[in-house]
Amino acid sequence: MISRDHDSYPIHKTLTEHQPEPIIHIVGTLTYKGYAPLGTPVGYAGWKILRITTTASDIITEYADGDMNYDNVWSNHETLKFSR
Image (tube, rainbow, N blue to C red; front, top):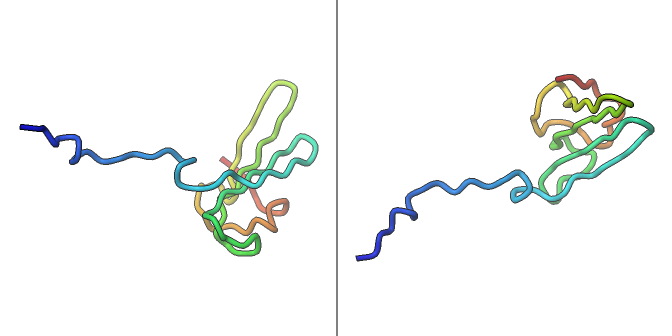
């Protein structure tokens, strides 16, 4: 008899398996990364946006609106409020 226990376990996928690579925009010490499902327009509120600040001693990652929700507009990424 063949065991089929493995068929009942949940399958976990990593973030990169669910969405395409981010859009990346670099301005001086700031790096913006925008994540959205394929086909999401840059002017649509369906993006998760991170801002990474790099200094001589730190790398700080902050999130638009202080959360990881897909509710931001990529074309506004430089004017959004970021926090942790």
